[in-house]
Each structure stands twice: as C-alpha cells, then as structure tokens.
Image 1: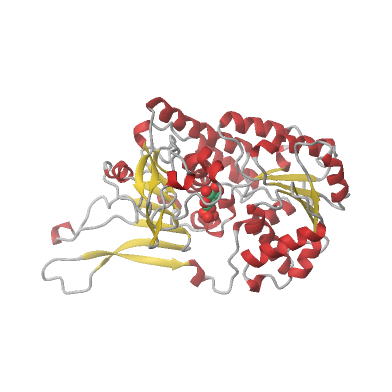
Image 2: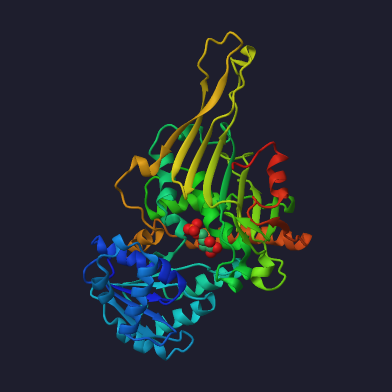
Amino acid sequence: MTFTADRLLLFGATGDLSQRMLLPSLCALEAEELVDPELTIVGTARSDLDDHAFRNFAREALEKFMPADRRSNLATFLNRLHYQPLDATDPDGFAALAQKVGVPKDGLAIFLSTAPSLFEPTIKGLQQSGLADGNVRIGLEKPLGTDLLTSCQINDAVAAAFSEDRIFRIDHYLGKETVQNLLALRFANMLFEPIWNAAYIDHVQITVAETVGLESRVDFYDDAGALRDMVQNHMLQLLALVAMEPPSDFDATAVRDEKVKVLRALRTVAANETVTGQYTEGAVNGAVVPGYADELGRESGTETFVAIKAHLDNWRWKGVPFYLRTGKRLQKRVTEILVQFRPVPHSIFGEKGARTTPNSLLIGIQPEENITLKLMAKVPGLDRGGIALRPVPLDIAMPDAFTGTQRRIAYERLLLDLIEGDQTLFVRRDEVEAQWAWIDGIRKEWERDGLAPKPYNAGSWGPSAAIALAERDGVSWHE
Ligand code: BG6
C-alpha cells in the first residue's frame, strides 16, 4: 500500500519514549524538510492536556533531549502538534479521537507505544471508530508479548484490524545506521562474502553491553529480564543480519525472507550453553552504584546479564558458534560484532619462529562506529633471529570516513519509513514468532534446571561463568 501519511497519531505521547526519541526525531525530520509540510501530528495519552499544554510539554522535552542546533524550527514544529486525552480501556473515548484526527488527505500512520495490556483495547477502539479503515498503517513498539503465546495473541489482535503490509513492528536497532551498514559491508563488497561461512569463520561474538541499571522501568524490566528485553529482539536481529543469505533486493520481502530463515535455523540451546547473572553493588565509570536488588527494593530472580552459545543448523554455519552476551551495569557501553576467522591452513613462517594470529573483523555498532580488520604483517627488520609477525588493524572510523554527515537517532529513520510506508527495517510476524519460539526454548531449560542468576559486580564483564562458557572452547570474549 503506497501512500505518504499526512496524519500521524502517537499513542503514549507523554511517555518516556515519546519525550526522548519520538518528538525529537520528528522535530529533526522537519528541520531538514523531510516530512510533508502538511503533516499533522496528534498525540494521545491518559494525561488530561489540550493542544496548548501538549505543545508546552513537547517544548520542554525537546529542550531537554535535543541538541540546540537541531531544533531551530521548534516553533513551527510545535504548531503541528495536537492532543486528545484518551483512556484506551474506554471504547467511548475513541470517537473524539477520530474527530481530532480528522479525515486524512492521503493517509494515516499510527504509532503505538503503550503498555502491552493496552494493545488489544486500543486496536478495538481504532476499529470501532473507523480509525483502522482505508489508508492506515500502524507501528508497534516493543514489548510485543512475553512469550510466543502472548506474542501470537497480540499479533492476532492487530491482524484482525490491519493486514501484515500495514503493520510495522519496531526494533529500533534496525534503524541504527551502523546496523544497516552491516548489509552494505556484506553485500556491497566482494571481499567478504566468499569467506563468510563455516569453512573460513571459526566463531562470531555479539556483545551488547550497557552501563545503565534499571533506570525508571522497574516493573517492566523485572518482569522481562535481559533475555527477553535484549536477546529476543535486538540481538537476534543482529545475528540474522550477520548470518543471512544475500537477499536478491534491498526490499522488505527479500530481506525479511532471508532473516526469517536464519531465525528458524537456530538450534534449541541446552542449559549448559547459557549463563545468567544479576549485578551486585560495584563501580561503573568511577561511581559506586547499588546492586539490582537494592535498586529494585526487593530480592529478585531476574537476570540482568545473559550469555549464550548459539548454533545455526544450516549449511553455511554448521559448527560455527555464535556467542551472544548482553547485560546491564557492565564495564562499558559497547555494541559490537566480532567475526573470528580460522587460522591459515599452513604457516610458511612457522619454521622461522613466527606465529600467525587468525584474522578478525570487528564491527563496532556503538558508541564508536568503526570497522577493524586485523591482518598479519611482518615486523620490519633484517630477521636474523627469525621472522616476527604481528597483527595490525586496518581501521575504518565511520565518522571520519563520512565527515559532515548528520548522526541520527534510529527513530528518525523508522518514523520516516512508517510515514512513507517502507517495511524493510521493520520486523515481520514470522520473524517475531521464530524469535520467541527460540527464546521460549531457553526459558524452558532454565525453568527445568531451576537456574538462578549468578551475582556479578557492577562494572565488571558479568559472571566469571560467562568467561568460562567461551573459554572452554578456547575462545576469549573481545574486550
Ligand atoms: C531497549 C531495552 O529496547 O534497548 C533497554 O528495553 C535498553 O533495556 C535499550 O537499554 C538499549 O538501546 P540502545 O539504543 O541504547 O542500545
């Protein structure tokens, strides 16, 4: 369905995501004239505000969360904003919302960032008030369920009102420039693809380390835990992009067809291939921080760290472990992918005393966006005492390679794609369900074995068992 929406309806408009990401992204898009001058944005949430009060609310958020040089258009942007209070559990409120949205000229884009319990009543309300009819598409923010069953229930509820080509499930990692760059690296270069398989790659590591703790999302996080909060979505999407076959086109169907094959090839993980942890008091970036239970105010069995040795049962990746780890309150904030190649089959320098280190490709996603290929080089010298070789980095710092380009937050891209209707960077139903099926398998193992998270000090790299998980295969985590 091709149309560019001229109305945008934001559910959860006064929430944290809206303040930090959605409103700043929309304001930035407008400053660059990337959205239609006619675009009207209607916010809705429970808070009893009118247009004027919502504009004030938005102004405060933008002043707080947006660099001054990106909001020169603040006044014009605020004029686009309208607001209608709504209790989504009360079906009667939707008529007034529909009236506020009015009749779009070309079409309506809806963005749902609300508590999961409000999904179903919201969809029903949209349907009953006619807001789901015609040129309408809907963006859904996570969490979309807590397991396969609840995710299917949400998907069914949405499918009752919207066809799949009108549903845009958000995984904000897909909106990150460096994540998309993974596809460029793999499929716009001849170099890597011929060796991107089990014959040449020893293993892959994916790390998503955070220094933050619970932040303000106490109940949500304690119900979710690291596996469902980070692995089920972001990390599996990264894995799928690393492991997928070349799609025939960079379009929604081709890319998602290939990703889902990878997700379905994930082998059920055994309990001894996972490690969970929970942070205790420690120091992060020089500041003492409390342990998880203290932040939470009670004891909890929720994992704030997880490491997994994953396998893909397909021809390309048979026998290549994918080590995944993510956690809160780790030593530093870093998201990166390490592709570790195999050793050369025979070293011609061995007799001359030189050791060769296998090549590796490190793809830094954040905070540093860089790509480092480690190659072996000869240490200069006359080599009377033998040849010395050393790995040297071939480094590409993306910001240096592309100076003068704007660094954007993921939601700028994703909101624009939602408004314009490009689904390539959104997650399809079959992907989400394959992701949940694998995650449910892990949780079943944990429950069967009564696995409790191991304590780790805030500011460390997680429990030592996570190091052992890789080391028993002779692998060291990249740090
Ligand atoms: C969210 C998780 O999806 O991603 C958070 O719910 C996490 O717990 C966040 O902190 C990380 O996103 P980013 O873009 O900061 O890496």
